Image (tube, rainbow, N blue to C red; front, side, top):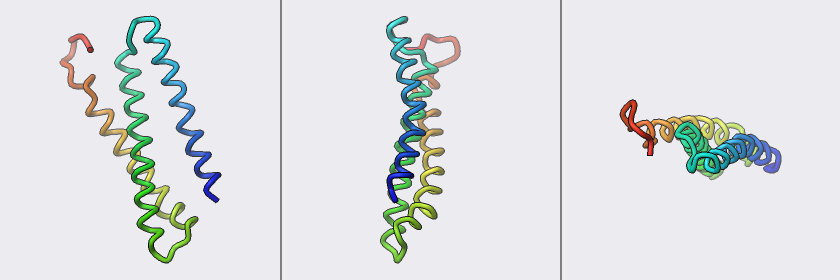
Length: 109
């Protein structure tokens, strides 16, 4: 019952995470550090993943304490709340990155 949703989420997250990790590693080998764009994308993905896990887990735990089954808690509360919290956390991670605080034209550190 939990294997299919957990496997789908893990696969959906693993694909872009692997791509971004390989991109960052290649850029580090070529230039000594990953580009600002790659670092921002990786930060956004990690923020969205953490938001998904925390938001969905909390919503599912709260609903599951009521007279609701596990499957219903996942489908009707955990997954929708997880999507919303992932979007919010990803947006916040993207906007609060140190790269965005640099004035235009300055060197990114």
